[in-house]
Image (cartoon, rainbow, N blue to C red; front, top):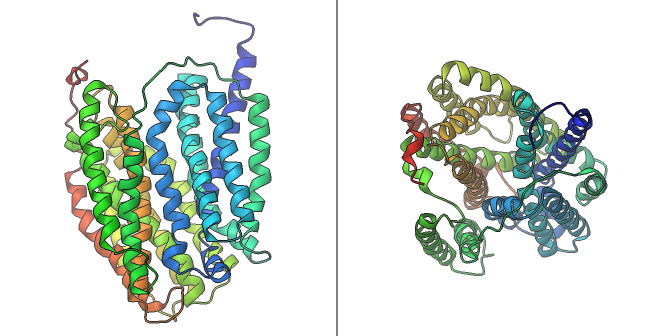
Length: 477
C-alpha cells in the first residue's frame, strides 16, 4: 500500500489516537496498581498476620513476574495480533485484581499479584509498538513525551490513592477500586482496538523461561530468607535458594549465549559486550535497587515508626513522584543539549547525598524532613535514569536496540525486586523491636545500606558518555 491522499485518512488518524489513549489509560491503571500496595503493606501485615519480610513479596514478586514476562513480550507481539495481546493482558490483570480483592489469606493475595503482573508486563511494550505503527513519524516524539509523563505520574499517585482509600476503608478496597476501571478498559478494547499487523511464526525457547524464574526468584528469595531466618520464619536454609538461583543464572546466561548465535535467544545478551551500554545499565540497575528499596521502606517507617496515618503517608510520597514526572521532559531536552555525563554525575551525587540524609532519621523526625529528602532523591534519580537509558540504547550498533531495550526493562524489574528484598531483610535483621513491622533502628540501617550502594555506584558516572558507537555493519547478518 502506498502513502498518499485517501478519503479514509482522517478517520484512521482519529481511530489511531483513540487506540493510543486507550492503551495509555490501561498502562496508567496497571502502573498505578504497581505502587498502590506500598502504603497498604502495614495494614496487610496486621490483618493477615505475616512478617514484613513475607509481605514485601507483594512488591518484589510483582516485579520479578514482570522481569520474567517482559523478555517474552517480543515473541508475543510478533506471534499474535495486538488486539489479542491487549485483551489477554487486560483479562489477566482483571482476574488478578479480583483474586487479590477476594483473597482469604496471603497465598491467594500473592497469586493475584502475580497474575496482575503477568498482564502488566505486556502492556507497555504493546503501547510503544502501537505508537510506532499508528502515529506518524513527525508526531511520534511528542506522543512519546506525553506517554512518558503519564507513565511517570502513575506510580507517584498510587500511594496517595491508596492512602486515601485506607483512611476510610480496608486494604482490599485498593483492589476493588481499580477493578471497574480495568473492566471498562477491557470492554473498550474489545470494542475499539483494531491495529493492523503482520504476525509471523517465531520460536520461543521453553527452557529459558523456567530458568529465568528459578534464577531471579532464587536470588531474591534467598535475600528474603536471611531476614525470615533471623526471626524464625524461614522454612529453608538461607543459602539454598541463593545457590540454586546463581546456578540457574549461570545456566540461563550460557544458554542465551548459545541460542543468540542462531537468533533464538529469549534475552539476547550481545549488547552487554559494549562498554558504552553495559556501564549505564549497571548504574541504572543499582539506582533502581536503591530507589525501590526506599519506596518500600518509607511507608513502613512513616506508619510504624512515626505513627502517620495511611492518607498522610500517601501525601508525603506524592510531591517526589510528581516532581519525577514533571522533570522527565525537561531532563530529556537537557540530555539532547548536553549529553549524559553533565547530568548523570551531579544526579548521582545528589541521590547519594539524599540517601545519606535518610540515615539521620529517627523516631522524632518530622514529615517535612521526609518530603524534602524524597524530593531531593527523585531529582537526583531523574537526572540519571533518562539520560543513562537514552545514551545506553543510542550507543548500540544498528539492529541491537530492541535487544538492549529488553535487557534494560528486565534488569529494572529484577533490580527493583532485589532492592525491595534486600532492604526489608536488612531492616528486619537490624530492628530491635519485637513487632512485625519497622522500627527506627532497623529503618536507619536499611537506609544506610541504600546510601552505601548509591555512593559506591556514583564513580561509574565518570565512565559514561564515551562516544564509542560502532558502525551499523558491526553486527553480522
